[in-house]
Image (cartoon, rainbow, N blue to C red; front, top):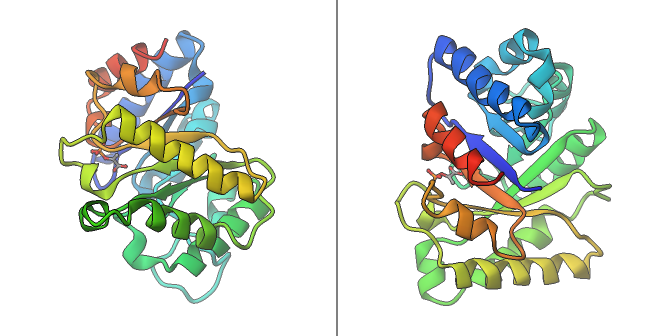
Length: 241
Ligand code: PEP
């Protein structure tokens, strides 16, 4: 079974979020594939959506989280709050959020999420400059080693390989690049005795989702722009049936 995560970023009114999440999860539960479909709505809607759709709260993710459980951290969101709102977990380290988090901080966030029994989808990826100068794999190794240094990780981790140059650009890593990179990530993880699901993100759409998900190392996809229209996103889910 594959995983598909829709990242809504800073989009949708409360009413759109309420209607669209229902459309998507009603469809996926009818087709009995609900355990693999997740949506990450904007932070202000998390508790509301989880309250009105308790049957779907385990499919709702936060787009980011910080390591602190409480305290004087204006504007932050804690793993404890996510736990109390009964959502499933959080994306962590998305390239659009990394300006707020150090590698060390991300590592502590993973520990805090784990303490709250939440799923962590750790996003890693190289920039175009790093890719062009053949530093991509080195960057990924560094991110894995620094971001997963403080936690025993008892099974609630997923890693999303998201090349920064592919996010929202319409450019996708080639199938060979995805496969080779995920093999590299698996190898680095195995040095830490970790075997976790690996997903790909970066301009995934209804035309490329099937072939990306048919790669042996790919356990699923993280979808940004193309998750916003619920009917389009459902078409993508159908490709995974
Ligand atoms: C993302 O933001 O995680 C992402 C993959 O975006 P997009 O699908 O729009 O490239």
